Length: 349
Image (tube, rainbow, N blue to C red):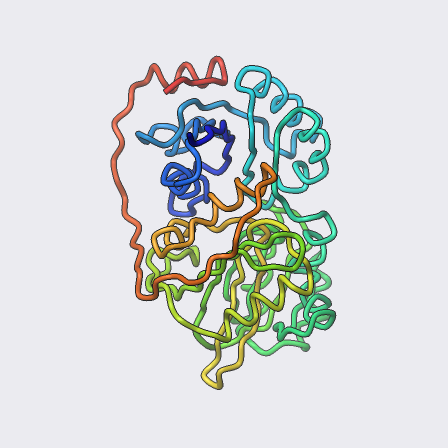
């Protein structure tokens, strides 16, 4: 008989800038090795995943990490008292530090996670990526962190336009002159704080890899894809799995050298000269993870099994030529659901 796990999942904001929560849950519901009860953890009461059928069994609102780690962890403890959580899967960069820091506390309460270490999380920050490349032997675009507007004037001669202007957690804009850099700096820093990263623009094809490391240097899963349709926010609205040995080699080398633990996404530019530049390392499961599941590697299922202490064999292959396409869909709900979540912070579905 298969075990049944109660799994808490964040990131149900399935909008034009989607969180990974809904595709993670879809993957978990297709798991062959266990059954699930899904607890959705949301920051806003209009996150679409709340109201989608067959997504969460119950939803709890939680405070933003900016409210303080103590407040967030107290809320998780309250939810655990009611739900007896087995596994917690955070899906936002901005919340990971709190959960990594509280990993032992969560474990003592019976809540398992499978997250990167704080050192792994810190050294792959966008502002630290050039050092990361030198340390482990990867090609990284030239970049510099900017903490204030005066820094922009001092470094602008170090770059050729266009350049990418990136937030420390999210958002990236292509700037063609100094005025645009300043505009995007103000926009990003107001939302995500500083530093803002100025990164050399590498011309080529963007390819991404969704991967899972076991914390011992072994790659449990890795599925590369090429974006077929990109939104104005730079998000993949369609993609296709590809066969590329170089991408597999880069992923396995990175996981082996860093002993990466947990899910990750590599964002890579492949130039016309077949050179591969890592432009971002996202320390969690990506929003397109359901494509990996559809291609034969259910990475969320494997992550849960490792979180509860089970041995997991690495995936041996995946299907190339599998596509995903996102679409908009109107969900009809009832104001009573919105009201109950707003007033009580809880919603049984």
